[in-house]
Length: 132
Image (tube, rainbow, N blue to C red; front, side, top):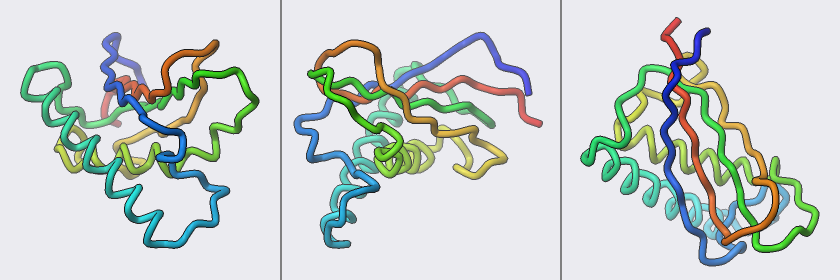
């Protein structure tokens, strides 16, 4: 598995931390579905737009990391935000950037926290891998 030197990214601003899908939440399935549909749609739109501008190529295989930025330094468990990262990845697949989100085509997505603080956002980083 060889990394190609180029990286690509999509940045998703977030209006409110309550929009995240948290694995610890015990919300009604309809609320969870609404959030999943929102993030999947946003990711599809942004990935399609980036593809059309030439900023995001089609990839056969990629390592994906989703970086979360928060406005405070409170302790957080970003691994619990995996359902949000998964919804974003599904939207990227819907846009045709990757053929599928199975382990043949995707390594990750890994959830990480940006050091420091900043505007609430998510940054999805794609590192193309040699297909193997």
